[in-house]
Length: 126
Image (tube, rainbow, N blue to C red; front, side, top):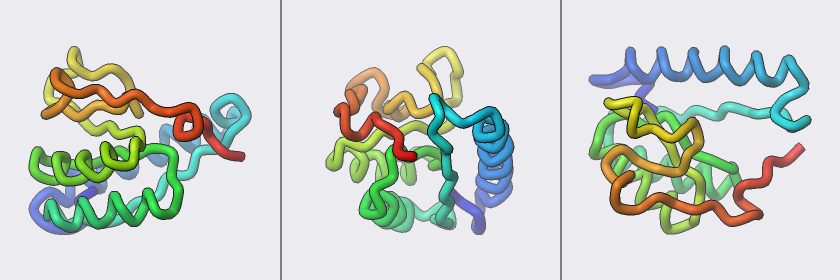
């Protein structure tokens, strides 16, 4: 997510909102007893950095990716997520096309290729 650069205000607002949301879920014993940790890496609104960040997070064995901003950054990160069968979601311009957070679809790819998570990737860890 862009925490610096041309879209920094979008990224910072998204990160703060995500932290507030997941902190509220964690305060109520998490999601089915699992605590959710939000990790953020700055891509500076640069697609190559978005892809590198996605790979880094997947290498850390995260369960899902979200928070990418802009078509080029989204597409770059989505390609990495798709290759590893990792859940992927981000803000959509038209909410009616959005399934849900962590829905595993990209606004640019949603009509063409919805990802189906494997059981191991869809399971949260304690």
